[in-house]
Length: 295
Image (cartoon, rainbow, N blue to C red; front, side):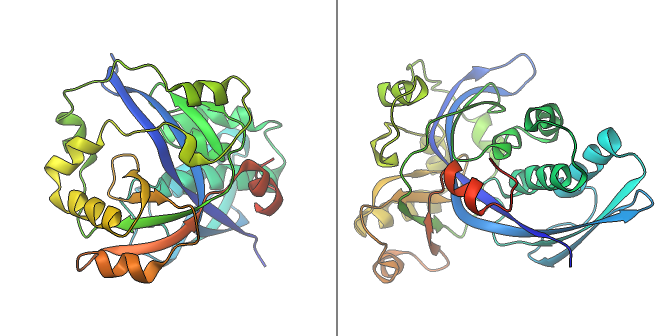
């Protein structure tokens, strides 16, 4: 039986947009956090150099448009020419939610192939490959709590924060990332919050809700996509705290001081919105439960 690996989603506890770079991307400062919502990826090494993907659940492509396929091909071209792989993907992370599902799949494939083939020797050697695949892919090589610079692809792992419950809400609206970035005008000049700096300089991790985070893209996204603003207001009406957009959305999350009452939240939400109960994951948990891919 081929091994099956969990490919975890993320949220952004904090996201600043500092300006446009010479390469056309935006300069970011972000704090990533793994959550326990996950896809499932099966991998089996095969002869002949072919890369195949079968999607068993979810509406995503199976060919070169899928980051998992591109990740497998990039890995094998560099470290195992002539080797093939057959993969299955059970998609549970909502597509287009700002939760990094495709990027997580790509990183999980890189890590799984490293485990199966015994090379390269260090996870850090995967970073250049991951970076070429997408800005969020490098983060998923480490997971947990991490600070992202540059396009978000320059990663500094931070001390583990406590694992807490969260509510994840997906409004019934497709969000366009290019449209949001095209409308960004009020670029932040603020320094990182002191709570983030303290964590980055060796401070002891605490409650994620104590991180003074915000999302510079949230006001723009709310103006462009009214369903996001409506869902945000409904979450607050249900008693949520520390509620914000993840990445460019469409997912909104709220960190919770107690186990989530999904029934109350769902009563407040407009028709078509989905509410999920999730939990943050530390690198310690990833090392323990991640099938040997992390840690």
